[in-house]
Amino acid sequence: MKALRAYAPASIGNVSLGFDVLGAALAPVNGAKLGDEVDIRPAESFSLDTVGPFAHKLPGDVDSNIVTKCYHHFCNAMQLAGKAISPVALTLHKNLPIGSGLGSSASSIVAAFVALNAYFDSPFDQDTLLTMMGELEGQISGSIHYDNVAPCYLGGMTLMTGAQSPVTLSLPLNEQWYYAICYSGISVSTAAARDILPKQIDMATTLTFGRQLGVFVHALHTGEFELAASVMTDVIAEPYRKSLLPGFDDARAFSEQAGALAFGISGSGPTVFAVCSSKAQAEQVAAYLNDHYIQNEDGFSHVCQVPQQGAVVSTL
Image 1: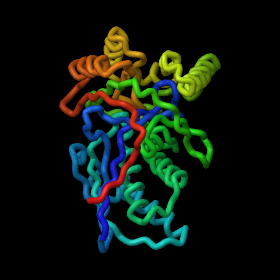
Image 2 (image 1 turned 180 degrees about the vertical axis):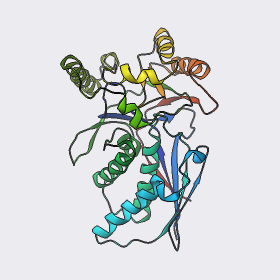
Image 3 (image 1 turned 135 degrees about the vertical axis):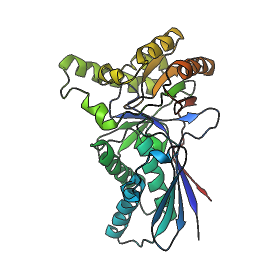
C-alpha cells in the first residue's frame, strides 16, 4: 500500500506587470522548502490532519479546509470519468502563511491534487488538473485565475492563455536573475485586495498594461532581459494596494538605490519582491527587508530563483 508526499512551491502572482495572467514559482537558493506539502495514505475512511508552522491559522472545521474540498472535487471527477476511488488519509503540512501573497492557498490546492492524481495512477492530464486547481482557487478568491496554481504546479514563469487548452504557456527564464522576497508577517486577503481596486481602468492605463506585457514576453523570448526588466511596473494594482502594506515605499526606494532591476508586490501582498542581477545584490536587499519591512515574528525573507520544476511527488 503506497504512501506519497506532494510538495508545491510558493509563487509570485502577477509578477507586477501581468495582473492575473503572469505567475512565477519560487525556490530559495539555500535549499529551504518554501511551499506546502500533502501526504496521502490508504485509509478506511477519509481524514485530514493539519500540521506545520501555520496550521493554527487554518479553519478548525476540517470540512472547511480547501484540501478537503479538493478531495471531494477529485472524487466527483473520478466518478464522472467512471474511475474507481477509495478513501485516503491526508496530512497537510501548512508551511506557507495565509494571506501572504505567496500563493498559499494555491500551494495547498496543487499539493492536494498532485498527491491525489499520483496516488490514483494519474487518471487526469495536465490541463484537466489545472482546470480543477483553478476552480478550487476561485472558491477562495472569488474568481477563477491561474497565476499562482499554474507556476506552482508546473514551475517556471507562466502566461495564462484564457483558453481551456492549453491553460498556460511557459516563458523563458533568465537564470541570472535573483528574487529577494519578504513576507512582512501581516495578512492581506485576496478578496480585500481586489475590493480596493477600481472597477474600471482608463484607456491610457490599459494601453500601458498591454504594451508592457507584449514587450516583456517578446524580450524574454529574444533574451533581451534588461528590456524585460524595464517594463516590470504594476500600473493596475500597486497604486492602490500599496496603501495596505506598511513600509512599502521605503522598501522600494532602498531596492532601487541598491540597483534592483524591478520591485513589486507579490500577488495581493503583503509579500514584496525585488528582481536583482546578482545573488549578492539580492542578499543585500533581503537583509534590508528583513530588518525594515517585517512587522512581526511571522515575517521572513529569502533569496530565491524561479525553478524549472514545480510540484514534485516522493514516496514516504
